[in-house]
Amino acid sequence: MLIKSTLKISAEKGIISGVTNLSPDICRKLRDARRAAGISQSALAAEIGCRQSQLSMLEQGDGTKLNDSAIKAFAAKFDIPLEAEDGAGAKHSAGNGGTRKPGTAFCPNPLCPGHHEYHAGDERFLRPDRTSQDPVGGRFCALCGEVLETACPHCGATVHDGGVCSFCGKPYIIVEE
Image 1 (cartoon, rainbow, N blue to C red):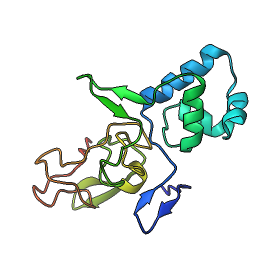
Image 2: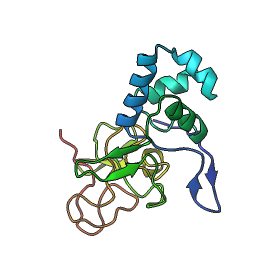
Image 3: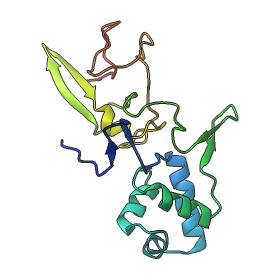
């Protein structure tokens, strides 16, 4: 499966600018606020400067479909904070806040469309496409919404390209047949 991205990548800085990766929870809050106000997606899209189809995808949980100015306008219109609290009460901003480089995490969901299947002998492996899954260094997969992993689930080593950890030799993603 070929995945094309319209995101702007800065070759000098190695970052993607102008895009915030919202969590699926914040996307749902934004959708619920719009619905409660009785405003159509088309009307809101025209007001905040995006296409209706982008707004629809955002409301379905794809937190990378709107640029930062449209996200801020959407959130401000309905007074929705772009932060979320985790179970311990700590707040996390919608973006990565500069804490982690994009493409340094992978999606552990074996059904995520951002995995490339390959075989070694009789074994089936999935190699995560970290660029499409983690385009902005966010907390959630840009393709399926799963929480991203930054370390090998078996030994805790930092992830690298490929589908198998070079330290413990186990696959990053468990494939159940």
